[in-house]
Amino acid sequence: PAPWRTTPTAGTSAAPLITGANSLPRRALFALLPAALAMPGVPAPAYASGGATAGKTTSIPRAKVRYYGRMSQVLNAYRELGKVIASGDAAAIKKAGKAFWSSSEEAPAEELKSAGYLLAVAFKIDSKIPPDKIPAVKDYKKMMGGVEKLKAAVSSGKAADAAKAYAASTDFLNLYLDAVELPAIGDSRYDNPDTACFFQCGEEAR
Image (cartoon, rainbow, N blue to C red; front, top):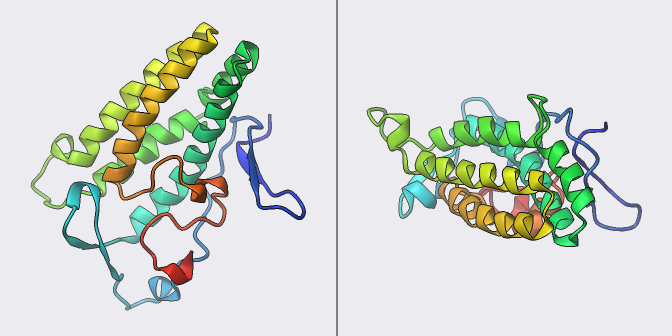
């Protein structure tokens, strides 16, 4: 099956499509980043922080940018799964669920689990704090619990249960996204992960 991806439609803005999940490319998705970030010897700019470091100013290392890129694909896929669930078509829901939770290491659910955790850990503000004590990691664990319940509901083939579980999962997901300084899942920037700028990189880069 083809990978989860966003396919632009001629003459319109890019529209995400569910096409499968056996392969999810981990490519750089932030061509619009300020040029200064890529220049050696130039420190990363400071940004107002949210989530776990709310009220403080932090620099965003390149590692976070890489995880943001991976997460953009996952979140686009999660939104598309929601659209299928909203359709109420039980057969389509089960099919979409199998794609999202594919056994492939690069399936959306697996990427959410791995990249989501690494991004959360990147928000450690004190090297002495163990990962489990990081606020973003705590929100990550709650989010993954919601995703597991969603998986069970989708697998059941009951559209109503899947819709209820998706709503609950989305609540936990949004708490996690806030902790890692990403917009809520309903943000239009997730419509096209190939051109999105998800962190505070300045208006000129959006």
